[in-house]
Amino acid sequence: MAEKRSKRLRSTNAVKKVGILNKSLNFIEKIGNKLPDPVTLFVLLSILTIIASFILGNAGVSAEYETVKDGVSEVVKVDAVNLLTKSSMAEFLKNIVSNFTSFAPLGVVLVSMLGVGVAEGTGLIDALIKKLILSTPKRLITVVVVLLGVLSNIASDAGYVVLVPLGAIIFKSFGMNPIAGIAAAFAGVSGGFSANLLIGTIDPLLSGLSQSAANIIDPTYVVNPTSNYYFMVVSTFLITIVGTLVTECIILPRLNRKNGDNLVDQVEIEDESAFKFTKEEKKGLLWAGISLFIYVLIIIIGLLPGGMLRNPETDSIIVKSPFIDGIVVILSLGFFVPGVAFGIGSGKIKNDSDVVKSMTKSMSTMGGYLVLAFFASQFIKLFEQSKIATIIAVKGADFLENIGFVGIPLILAFIIIVAFINLFIGSASAKWAIMAPIFVPLFMRLGFTPEFTQIAYRIGDSTSNIITPLLPYFPIIAMLVKKYDPKSGIGTLISLMLPYSIVFLISWVLLLIVWMVLKLPLGPGAFIFM
Image 1 (spheres, rainbow, N blue to C red):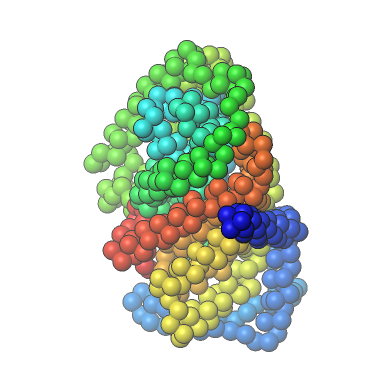
Image 2: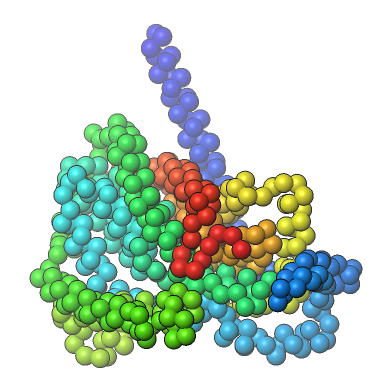
């Protein structure tokens, strides 16, 4: 009798837990779905900026701060500018096109996608993922799946489309729960979005937005796409190790206890055959490897003392050098050259038209980004011209200093805010376009570089990616889990990924704190403090 009551009590508690989880998920999904499209959001923010400028400008709101110019200290006063005057509106109308064409992330993202598009379109990236994962022994399979997930974010959707379903099949072939393979791959692809050993398309995009925001305070400030590189490399190993431990110590044991007996054992034959490594792909990888070796050798020669990629006056590789200034083109070619070689070797490229088609297909997917960039650029310019961003930065920094809310507690709060907002707005670039003009100048006034604010943002954004139903690929991953566990749903996937999200957040924040304490550089020429 007591045993029955105990079972009923456990069942009731389970229902309560599921009920609370579902209510939370439903709330997030409901609020997120009611938010306007990011483009509409920027239009509304632009209108609010104009209205706020009218109110603050007529009220005579201003801010003063001390700066040093040519070794001389001076006090600068900034007044809110009313954007509803004839002259301001005429000036804005005249510059709408230039606001868009001079938008910092625009060119670098498009150039990056030309190279990445060829590597992705010819099948090079898919082939690399398959080759590495199919050649891995069982004892290292979790490590490799998580690591490849992290690395796959250099090529847009390759990780979601190829690696996540492949992770399930590989885990199952080794006698492991395939849902754990899905979780490990998904954790690497989405949770490790801001870690990598290579510079991807997201780096120039975010750095461009950070630079635009930094220019509100310092018009000469430059944020390079490589500005977070050192931290990203270390983060890659951190996320791989942590993701592996969570998978093997938490996820696999939990899944085996939960549904080991009810697991769907039959996997469609065509799924496995789709991931077999072909003779053509082997030949293509050989060609790609040779071409990449030659390309890297040329880059190394250019970086030797007196080389063309060094600063001609100082011989520096980092400061104002062709290497850093041209890093986006260099990286794009780093994908383009082996991508073309793979296509020729595998037979997927037969003439120059096939190469152009790959680039054209890549550019055709950027239509949504171009629309977003147009409206984001107008909002940022209006926000800058109104001087509201500068006033918020000065007064906000003074307020935070007065109450003693600075340093590590401030950064921790910022990361948590970003992680929470990410539950409702999935796009990393859209969120940063909104947040950067406020937080980058604010943190600059508190002594933190734009590069550091950017990496703090990326940590918060990445760690909650895997638990938000509004992530575009989230429903697809949920359906993949359902294939192996017919009783699963969105709540199942969130409860599966929540341990990754929590552990990633804690470990990544600890790494950032260590970085702050040791005052390590974030990337080439990029530091934590101004």
